[in-house]
Image (cartoon, rainbow, N blue to C red):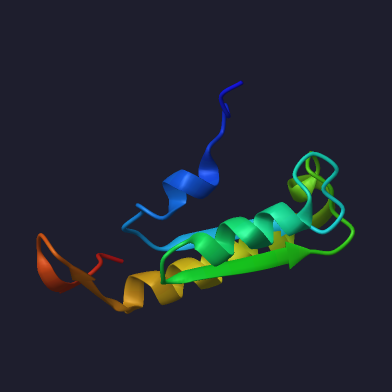
Length: 94
């Protein structure tokens, strides 16, 4: 049966900043799967685990921590120069 979500095969081809925010108690996608996926992702990449959070409740249980993870990652991602084979090195717009 084909894999409906061949993420490990596809993530290697990404050409962008990668952020994974994952609940430590995720019962749908185990943390070990999230770690394996991020290990395969090209740089730059970052993973944040939210304690006490499952797959379905990151905003209700960790809304501020969830948004802080995204906001701080975005600030770093948009401040860093990026090497792009098509465009050369450039700054991402803020």
